[in-house]
Every structure is written in structure tokens, then in C-alpha cells.
Image (cartoon, rainbow, N blue to C red; front, side, top):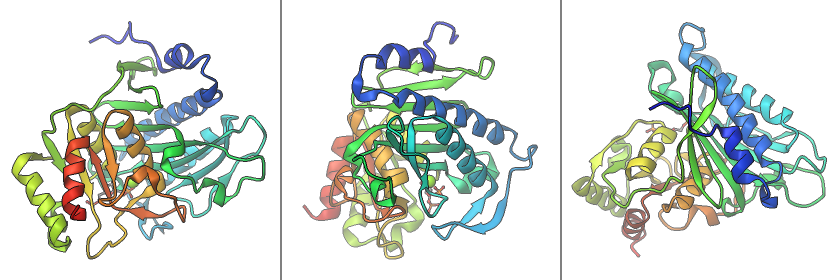
Length: 324
Ligand code: AHM
Ligand code: MG
């Protein structure tokens, strides 16, 4: 397939978003993320050659070892978003406190991000990615950490990027989920997946089967049911597992277990943005007990159980887990 006739991301934003007052200034945020992801993609591609593998020797606010590519990605996206002229504050999985950029009127968005998802796969050339939830700044007062504690259902857009066998950029708003592929020759992202809808069939389930023994009885039963009806696929990078399931149909589960009563994944950086994409594409996202998007966050780095993907299969799984 040649990409010559496909609209670029910039052309798409100009034609599809112009005239929509709800989205004013959002194009600058999306373009900033695209520019950052191009830079991160170059680091990912050169990896060992570029001497960016391995850990920094530090531990992040989540208590996890910081990989060098985590740090490079975090710095890159903080820089491009701060320079975009549209962002008031940034919350980042790798940074304890939010980055407050500016509070001028034009800085009307807040971005919460996992700058490099799938850290355990960095050193072994397996797909990784970046995830972003975008909220409109509320109120006229000073932006503080509390300003960022908004529920997922108030997101105006979500973006994720997969650095895989190709680099794919997906942006979701209330009106559409659109996927773009990086043309490495021109450096443009071109529209290759217009109006993504999760397929009705659900061939795959994705979960860490090594955690099975730590699940409660109801959740074990839910996983057993999925084993009987679907093929298993698990990359271990949420963003890559989600992308496959979005395009092919599938359900992803990282439920609570004995060792992780609050779940493993982060509400603000992973569950909310991908939950938003899933819902806009016709899917669903739940903790096992309630809709992800309805959770009123209490803290920035809050964790959550996550069940994500085809709506009917998510609903069946949730009803078994919750005994409902
Ligand atoms: P990260 O954001 O530090 O990379 O951690 C999140 C990752 C997800 O991408 C993935 O789904 C999960 O953690 C894998 O966890 P596990 O190795 O326990 O299966
Ligand atoms: Mg992550």
C-alpha cells in the first residue's frame, strides 16, 4: 500500500477538527505529541546502537526501576507539550508531582501520560508505546495537583502510540477513533485506519497467566471461561496488547489479586486514556465492579484493576468477577 493518497495527521486535523469549538487548541497538543513520538521512535529504533538501553539506576514514584528510555521519553514529551502553547499542566507516570506549565487562557488543556509503556520489553526489541489522556482545564484559578484529579469521562481526547513493526498513532475524540502510520521516508503520520471500531468477534484474551494462582475464586472462574472460548495473546505491553485487541477484537485483563489489591496499572496514565479509546470504538472498560471512566481519582498515581475490550465480553467477565 502506498501512503501517498492518505491525509497526513496535520491535514486530517485541519479538515476534520476545524470549526469544532470544543476542540480549539487541541490540534496543537496532538501535533506536539506526534512530534515527541517521532523523537522517541528514533531512540527506540536505534536502541542499543544509541546507548539508551538499561536502567538509570533510579526508582520512580511507583517504586519501579527507571529505564533510560523511560527517562528520555518523559523528558521529550514534557518538553514538546510545554512548548505547544496549549497545555497548562502535565501529569506523568515517571514524575512524582505534576509539571505546571502555564495558566494563560490559551493553555487550556491538561495532559496525563505514560511516556513509555511496556518498560520490561525495552531491552528485548518487543513492541512498546506511549499513552496520553487529555482533559480541558477547569476553572479560572491556579492550576494545582488537584486540578488534574478529574474522572475519565471528562477527557476530551486520548492518544496512544505503538512503537512496533510499524509506528502507529491513534487519536480518539467523541466523534471518532483514527489511526495513522509513520511514513519513515517523509516523517509524516498518514491516515491508515479511519474510524476504528472494535470488531464484533472477540478472538483473543490477554492476561498474565502467571498471576492465576493469586486471583480470587470468581476471577479465576472468569479467566477459565476466557481460556475456553478465546486464544491467548499477551505481549506484556498494555498499549500493544490493547492495539491488537482494538483492531482484531479481544479482551485485556489485569485484575486485582492477592499481591495487588488495588491492581497493577495506573488509572490516570493507562486505564482512563485507553478506556476512553475503547468506549469511543464501541468497547468497554471496567475495574470488575464499576466503569473505569466514572472513578473520581483520589491521587495522581492511583492504581486500578482493568478489564478492557469488546463490550459484551467485558460485561460477561465483570458479571462473573463481581458475582452480579
Ligand atoms: P509500565 O508502564 O511501567 O511499562 O508498566 C505497565 C505494564 C503494562 O504495559 C503491562 O500490561 C503490564 O505492566 C505488564 O505487567 P506484568 O509484567 O506483571 O504482566
Ligand atoms: Mg505503562
